[in-house]
Image 1 (spheres, each protein chain N blue to C red):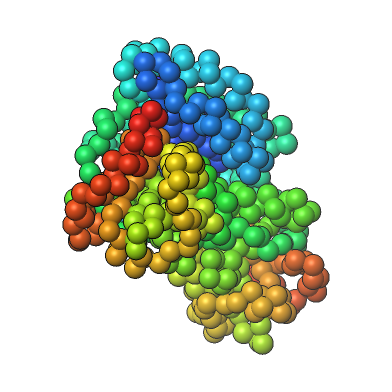
Image 2: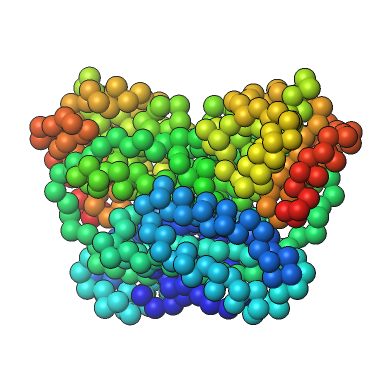
Length: 261
Length: 261
């Protein structure tokens, strides 16, 4: 990793900023436009200028080249901070956001996941809960709980007890013959793979319900899947003490996202 | 500001870390030991090694000298990050936290505050809500709402609707002849000035109740105060549309903290 930000950068001091993690295959980013649009939408929510996104393609290409990742699968991260901040919470009048890119090898398409239910709740009462923001400590703490329990991922509920998403993935499950995913208003990260799976499923005549769901719905599900931009659709084989048998719908869902992973 | 952190620092990429803001008068930090103890306690909650705190005094002194702030009032900030992180939420096995210090002139003892009630909620369901963490975006957003409304500070409720604290201060109010402050379990930053005021008031025979309070309790209060380490006790003169007359208890409360500001 080359490059640094100054001690007074608000991304560092206050988590004031956003990021995107983009799958790149042989130098070709997947869902590139969608990632940029999501970051621009997040900038609007946070009232940050999105002008630096014009440099995203250049910065991304240079990061991939510097990491020697123009071949194979890479995870490209774009990070946008609110820039130099001075002291305190108030942004300076002459705010200049900063964009930088880093690249790393992408994780391999994963084996079925083991997931716990974390005690760390998501905050549906903040717009940040739907954004990939630089204030990601709750997700870090939830994932730590998963690792401490010998699991790979952590399911997070919101403070009302509704199922939201995993620390670094969205959730889908099969319950009573219906495919379900939590509604964004539950404090759910607005995942691009989530949106792709929902849209493609519906186009193919497969209904997916977005709803407020209690933990009991997830706990009693016949099958559970995680989705994110790097691994696509990943089945859950163990959920908080309960084994889940392989389910034929996994193949259907993976096929929906096959060209995106 | 001199110094920088690398693009892969987890404080920058994920808000994985803590900070303290310490008032320094003529080179003498106020509540120094309490600040270090709070940061160490936060490290324990986040499972971060607190060994770097041994360098805090050296780093702080150098930051004050570099900023030419060994005279007068300075705000010294200690920032502890989880260090270099690699990709993703999981901390590396060989985690090495990083501590750095910055200094700026401290804000002057403030005039009475104008405060709104923010729509951004606090997350009582995360331990981070009680810590000065690097994931402070909710506080930034709440403060922005205050500024947009021509106010100085934002009162934040938690997702259950209970009053928590302000974006960068704790709250006290007088209601039915009783002094009240929200209980820490409401998603309240565990402020050192809050603790000092409570402890000193009780020692002086003044009761302060820590409780779960509805917004209506605050909205109907006879007097409201903000506290933090830089300004001590600050009266609120306007709260979300309602003017508050000066109250004689302000002098009492300010006197409790007079030696700390």
